[in-house]
Length: 325
Image 1: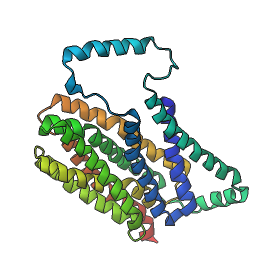
Image 2: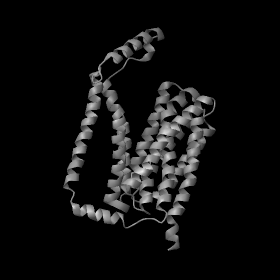
Image 3: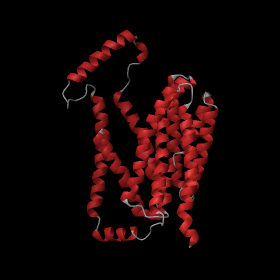
Image 4: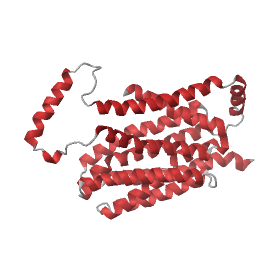
């Protein structure tokens, strides 16, 4: 898992830099298409694994006394297995193998493109990257680091705790609670798909402002009507659609004012990764200490307020040298 995380981190940085290097200011639809493919893969890969695993026996058919010895036997058998042994369920192995084979084929295609790239194109790309640099380049990167820290962290937090929040705080059945995650990712992927076409006629700043407004409104309703299943259905879909375009729009927006290199891209992606690590952990601890409060919704609302305030500051800082000229 550690090696997989390192590889995914490299891919996240590399694909953003490739799109910015190829299309520059005209790459907004391509950036939206890239992140739509992320959402589509997150939606399809679990379905593939579920089909490969096949139907599983429901936990409702077992009593607690019947389940405990079976779990102990399974854990003892797993502990005695060698390190590189094949799993007992070969369907699980085929699910990973099929996805891994697909990634390998695409990687070979990228490697072929890399081998065909001429040195002349590389030199022209480097000279073009050095031609534009904002006066407050480092300050913009630091603010974007904070922006993505809260955006990515809250996105992962909401998706991770939504099922538990719906069952324990709202009191819905587990089947309905699973539907909340489905509606969240469905609205998320659908809005990213539509953003491919919207990016051709809307500026990145406009899309970020619309996303911030949708996040604020949906999070406010989630806080005010935290025990209403109907509100949770509607607000979850609106929230998923609102935050879908924020990340690709943020990358396209900052590229308008300063050149984004590989190091710069890695810097603000680290901000998103740290938010992915820190905010869910803090939210889980606070929710455990205050079980009667909708800590999850408070976290989402606080993050929406912070990003809504932070973006005008970044916009003013980015356009300040242009205003003086």
